[in-house]
Image 1 (cartoon, helix red, strand yellow):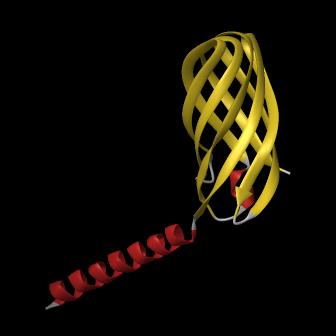
Image 2: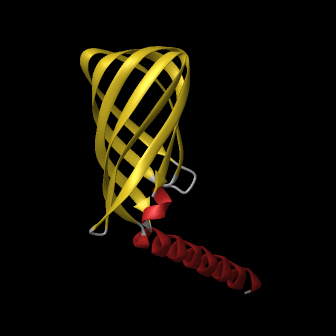
Length: 146
């Protein structure tokens, strides 16, 4: 009898915890993001740019800053666009995003990347790159909602 009461209590606790986590996920929303990034590198690189986050029918200006290190050289401009997932408010996009990757472009090239920040915001981006850029590096990007 005592065992079935404990099992029932544990089952109720698990169901309640699951309901709370689903309720939190249900309130998360998504938006779109579009920005341009200029990048210059010779082993250590820097990047910067700006763009727009569209979330719940409103547009928010954003700024981009970044650094990279590794095998990287060249100058390029990349136009990114995509979806932002798992955010509850526009400010959830603010944060640092890291990536390890490689690629290159002579003239024109294409990129696709998925990034996450510490608040759980996930960026699913595609981009078109123009310029001369070769890289195999670790890079970080900070996005700020103005």
